[in-house]
Length: 180
Ligand SMILES: [Ca+2]
Ligand SMILES: [Ca+2]
Image (cartoon, rainbow, N blue to C red):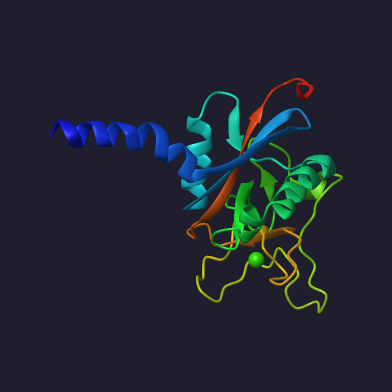
């Protein structure tokens, strides 16, 4: 029994955090945390909120934030694999179909910046609210691993019940500390 407790304690304290969190970095006044354990959109949103007061599912409402996060994914072979074919981020059109907004924030259609995936053939331009698998449509936003062979991780709406990686953001409220 004692051995089990010790083993469980070691597993909980040491193994679990490194299993789920692949990487983090600071850019544009926030720390960005990448998670590879797959969750639904809602579970990933709640997970980020439970990390602390200044944490949320990533809000990529400026070109600089979006670019910094996408470049980090593209530079890291493990992150680039993108479990579930993408990473959840904090935007949805659950409340009003076709009108996406950032969590606790502005409607994307009213902002200067958006980065929805544009298919070179014009067949899969996003957001498309695809009804093939679920008639309720796609209402949650991801950084999409597409095109498959050379992904750019632009934005896509996907089924909220799907499980995939996710990015949490810790808002620092100040510039990132200078590297040591
Ligand atoms: Ca939708
Ligand atoms: Ca879609």
